[in-house]
Length: 172
Image 1 (cartoon, rainbow, N blue to C red):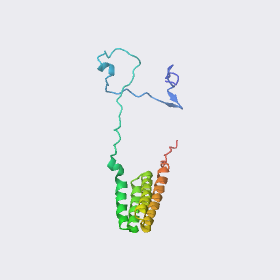
Image 2: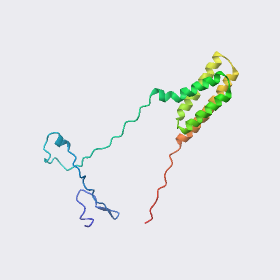
Image 3: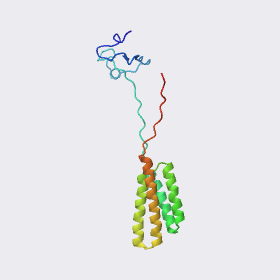
């Protein structure tokens, strides 16, 4: 069969770039048409034959509960408040560094870290108004700075394009 014999008036040539494309055989199992299930006769020609096949529908995405959304920031905030109450910067820095490592491992979004930094700035303001203690405010500024650094690092990682795989090229 030549290229011109395999073409019809409404289709593309059977060969493109020297490769002959073969039509795929129809499936062996018969899928009932909607007209047959509606009570209409199946042998009545309603138009060109269409191959009907069921399509896979993906499962809907899992809804994230409110607790799951705020779990990490609330745990970190509670830990920070606990560390701040004893006014020990070492405990607070260790907790923030642990959060930074978990943010990198579990891909916590950078906006969460920036929100924690904003909460820390708000806490500094409230603490200075309620109990003006320079040491505690100094600790909070250290924690805010560390949170901003972690936020910038996670933002840089989020902004990088995904790595492309190398494709194997066949030599012909």
